[in-house]
Length: 345
Image 1 (tube, rainbow, N blue to C red):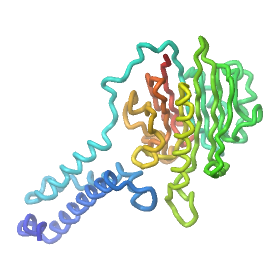
Image 2 (cartoon, helix red, strand yellow):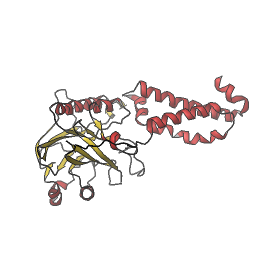
Image 3 (cartoon, rainbow, N blue to C red):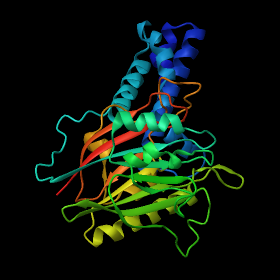
Image 4 (cartoon, rainbow, N blue to C red):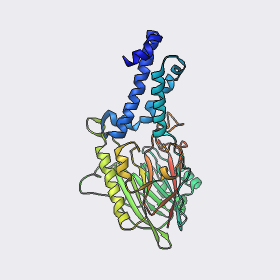
């Protein structure tokens, strides 16, 4: 009745139905945004709408011609509300006043990349590292056919390496460092959270010189997709790993360590698991990043616009993010390359 009083007397039945459906769709978007904010979901269809929330607004572009029609005030109000909500939730990030580190006596540059298992990237990786010049390199989904560890040129650039078969580390994670590695290990818990082979965590304590050390933790939790039998999107296992990661990193912070947590976390910042992962840590992108920060997508089908932000560089309180670059040039992986610069006191 409400829609009828505002539109029906002045529109043909076909146009009335079109405006009605458009208004209902806009209303549904507003309702979903409210649910995402107040009642965030971990599993099922509503959780999937959280992950892909920005793209649910795309059909509104098709409905823009309705704005020129007369007697469609209700739709115009709904559309204006949707545009406001979209702007507040998904506008590109701009660091107008990025934090500085005037007391930083040491700076470290870290490159992180999920190489996408099933593809060998030896030549691409060496070219990438020569162009970026990071002091630390963290890799996930290292393929068994990758032979970069045997490269004498790579060994010259990064003489300290945690990569199979040189060291007994997780098969799909590697760390290349220009700094000496004082100690390293993997994360294992008694509760079986990290029993799945594809979910791995590697950590190392690095000697930066001048009595400075840095603990770097490389994580790759499972995806929420098909992680549980008979459930397409269930995040319980992944979120348990995200909480475990946060607890692990916090244990170093409590000892006074400077810590970086990096990797493909398989979670967007619109999900409850993100907040459990980042508690007590600084998300480098939200502090010094620019744009959407999206780092994953179907690059073979859509090389222009990555879909989601699931790769992160998270810093402990003693580490100051100074810059973060997301490089999505095609390199044969479905993930972009993250390069971060950090300051330590």
